[in-house]
Length: 135
Image (cartoon, helix red, strand yellow):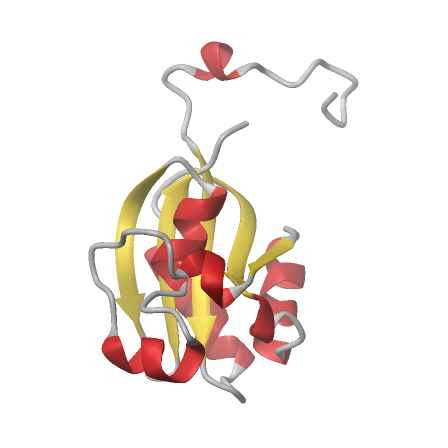
């Protein structure tokens, strides 16, 4: 139900509507929250953000928590070994060495979504990728 008490539209009813989105995000320890928020804002295409997703070891990272609160969405987390099983367009050997998976942003977006809309985008301390999100 929506806030107005209307039934939530089914996927078939949403044809032509902007898609629901999930942003897969990664960041280094101590990433400035405003940097992560700005990266997400500049990476998002038109659509409705439904969730942020990341590796479980960043679940308590202040930048992640503040971004989820800022956008009013849940923060979904996945263990590195689950992220490592996802085939992504831009894997990173450096991330694999430090985190245990060659991708955080793209893999987390794909595990939460259905298809990648925006591949990994980087800032100095963060990454963001966007996938279409199922209902």
